[in-house]
Length: 270
Length: 325
Image (cartoon, rainbow over all chains, first blue to last red; front, side):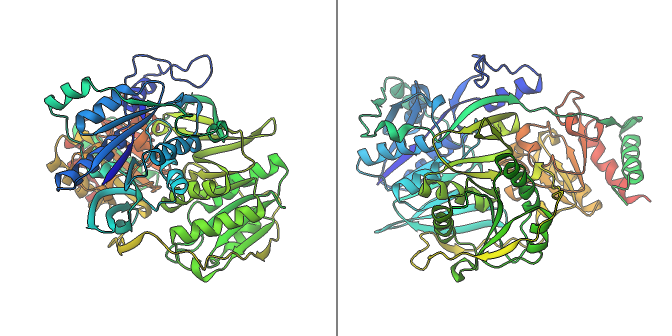
């Protein structure tokens, strides 16, 4: 079985959060790019969980090759991380990730998946933690004509011929159990749980691995296919209006009584 | 063809007009005014009670109604196909959806089928030099990313309705209802439901009072302090994502961008730092109370009332104070 993982390199969202909290996030002269080089680049955490989902299938005895693919100027660090975790093939599609949108990303990923003769299972993170758009997996499923199951907490294969994937989805009304015949696209959520750490021997080996680099032309795509339909024009820090009234008091009991009293006065509590 | 601004809704579980519809109508009206285009409301499946009155209040020109038996309940492949056929026939300049769990799945698929752009997490829409411009929440709500529609004539837009307010139109309308037909008879749902989601009891997103805990609780055992205060106030317990990831409680309690979006009357955040990711899920609370040891914690920027202190000491005292009359 062939499993493709789509992985994106993102700026560490916790570092961005921290800079915003201290009012120090810098946006470059183009008005949209976060320029601080001190913000680490890492694999989108949901995509790491997508790799984990694939590795759990392998742990259960599934014979599979895992292909990790990423788009960008140089995502080789995250691809080596994917290899260290257990990806057999690592693939770099060389396109400037900052200038494309979800539709172009989906076209490039579909081009890659077709170039390797298709995939049985495509696993993606539910969204990227930078733009939070979360549209690529569904666009990709449409381009490839595959069914899509979103926001998975658990993925298993219940039948081998035809291969059938069974997924526990996290919905607003609780967990839902669904299945689809492969090939299928599944998006993974944080409820899957913490991904494993790579073992040292694999990390050492992965360090020497070179990603296969593919260009737009090699994927058989025309310039038309890589024209973004939406373009990021500007980015700015959201502002919050603070007007917090701090409750004063001597010790926890007094503070608590003060708060409850205040909430009753304001008729928030009875 | 109409090239209207269209908002689309469908009912789920006979809930009436879906939550967020009035807010999305308000934003859609702003856009239709800016572009000089008609505002239409597309309803898939059963007509929810009160739709006509709400449409009139919000200046809708036409209610477009696809009353196909295949749309009686929400099914993703059927819904996608119906919307794609509608969009192909009517070429709306923008198709707006309140960003529910289901809409997140449908919006990009419809866009892919008709070659439209797609943008999610929209909080504002405008027209800049004739170009449709969409302001979205990015980096878990830390930044706003502004997108322009560049190489497409129409865009499917998911709107974060919870941060928006609903305002009726200055001049109400008397919308006509126009039936639209699509053919979804050939659609086979490819994802089979083995076990339905069947949440017993109340849902966090409907709760009027929520007490939520975060890492400041220190350990899994202390989550019961949050549950005790929630019980004492007749509310429900919520949680930040880090403690759900760590297994202190299950994900049905998770509040935030990737959890539940709540809008209670009272939200008490105990030991929660106030990461934007979390605030997306509770910023719409009418009154937000923060309890945190760190006076500089981001949560206090959002809070109406604050206590600087250890939530492990404060929470039991709050239970006592709530029970005392």
